[in-house]
Length: 224
Ligand SMILES: C[S@@+](CC[C@H](N)C(=O)[O-])C[C@H]1O[C@@H](n2cnc3c(N)ncnc32)[C@H](O)[C@@H]1O
Image 1 (tube, protein in one colour):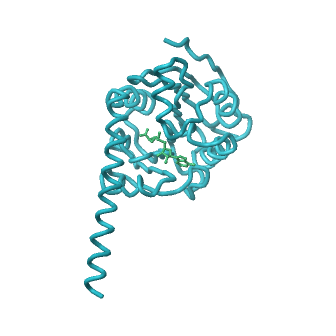
Image 2 (cartoon, protein in one colour; image 1 turned 135 degrees about the horizontal axis):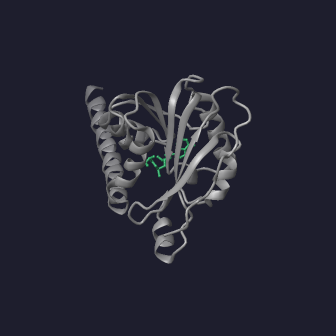
Image 3 (cartoon, helix red, strand yellow; image 1 turned 30 degrees about the vertical axis):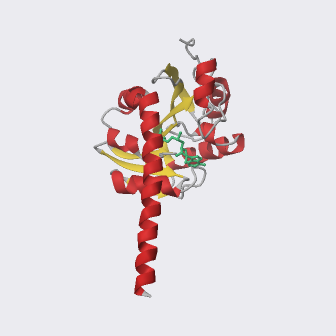
């Protein structure tokens, strides 16, 4: 019996290590293709500053952006339990294996919310469900930053993007229209981390009533 348990434990450690190796390889490839995530980190630092308080990263993956918030109470939520397991072992923060559309987090409890490359992983119904969930958990006047992949327009980008597990790339106008039903869009701009291209949406929830959120501007700068 003891022998069986030992073999079982050894096997599960090996499986865990294999998962880790796979996660590390994928992360390293992304790190190379996106030039060390420098651009994404710049956005977080510009929009959130030296953030203090509760912040939630929805679709956090391995939670690598948690290190951008040394003074905040960072929570990472991801649907993939293997990534959350890895995050718990390697980064500081609270990590939860839950879908972004049903996080189980407390209502009105986060001053900041962000997502990076999440929405092209989900169908349109789920995009809206996640927005509704963000609207629920964020405090009135809270800040929401979405950094989302643009639809690839050139052959090389299309080829690289075809490797992406998400694949549901949509035009920024689509997101602008959806987000403006939930939040007040304050600004939008593009970033170009390595071979990638993202649109950044910086948004707020109204301080008073939660109703009546509308888009202030949706001017996407021209493609480079
Ligand atoms: C491209 S990865 C981005 C990970 C991380 N934000 C980053 O930039 O390193 C997209 C992540 O979204 C997660 N995801 C997909 N559908 C989700 C959902 N419904 N709720 C929460 N996370 C989801 C995936 O598991 C994956 O980790």
